[in-house]
Image (tube, rainbow, N blue to C red):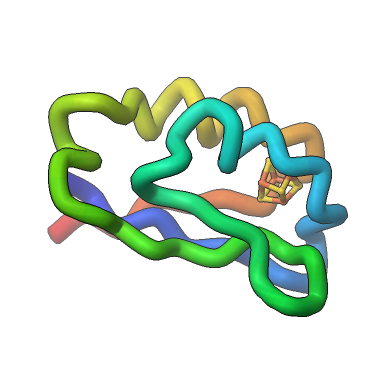
Length: 64
Ligand code: SF4
C-alpha cells in the first residue's frame, strides 16, 4: 500500500480525508491532517479516492 503524505501548508483541516479513511488519517493538535495508518487500513481505504477528494490537493502518495 502506498504511504500518504500530507502537505500541511496546503491542508485546511476540512476533515474530508478523516471521514473517508479514519484508519489512515486523523487531525493533529493544530487541526491539520496527519497520517496514522492503523491496522486494517489497507482493505478499508481507497487512498486514490481520498487524494482526489481533498479540496486542497494536499495529499500525495508515496509508492513503497
Ligand atoms: Fe487537509 Fe485535505 Fe484532509 Fe481536508 S481532505 S483535512 S484539506 S488533507
